[in-house]
Length: 298
Ligand code: GRG
Image 1 (cartoon, protein in one colour):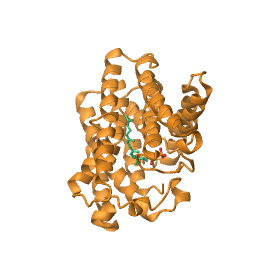
Image 2: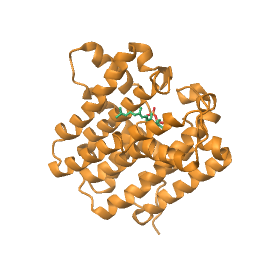
Image 3: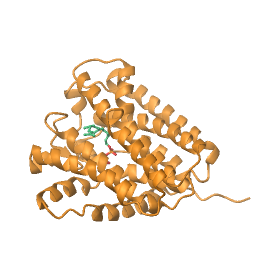
Image 4: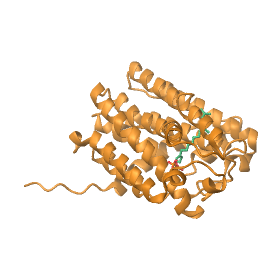
């Protein structure tokens, strides 16, 4: 009988993070204006879990592709994510002064530069996919570009953020909260998961399973984010804790309570893993990453 070695997520994550950090460090090639480059890199190279790039590389591998071909897209996903954090922290949005353990972009460089650094990162993300992904057939890059544009735009992050802002200070129904989470958070996680597979030329059935996995982990991810806002401190989170309560934001803990929120996230993770159950061996990184989402401390 062959005993399978336990999957070492910590080691896997560390190795992938090193790969992503190295690619990100070289990604911004802009020379002038130096002030813009500095503002872009300040947030892009500020650490973070790098989960979206790791999901992309892991799904590329699962689909039998070479993850090195997915690295530019992995960087693009982190650029869109970083842009959304910079803009989310602005006074006109969530108005925060702490992110990833340091002052937010607008606190360092001013509001105008923070808006522009976000804009530049968003545009460069599309350049990474369309113009810096050598060795990947153009048709696959077109599919990734389209999916990324939808996830970042009105049918994704932007739409979710609009409803989120409109819901502040109100008690919204669970369906509205789910809408916000699916658009603001799950949409980018979904494209992170499927883009690696698209780059590898995965069959439609696998992309559909990955989509189902991703929507479930995406929703669970935001529920846990809401739970951590209540239970963790600012030093651990690297951002201001307890903010949702103070700003009377509708969250899962506010609507359901902490325990029911945790149970709801656990159910979603179970469904996510079930979507990949038939691919057990090749899907080990993604299965372990699903558990990481509920067990994380920040
Ligand atoms: C301008 C196209 C455009 C979009 C901006 C501001 C905005 C629209 C959307 C806000 C999206 C947002 C900030 C969602 C929160 C997602 C979330 C849970 C972030 C935390 O992600 P982690 O925990 O952070 O992966 P790290 O720092 O580890 O990367």
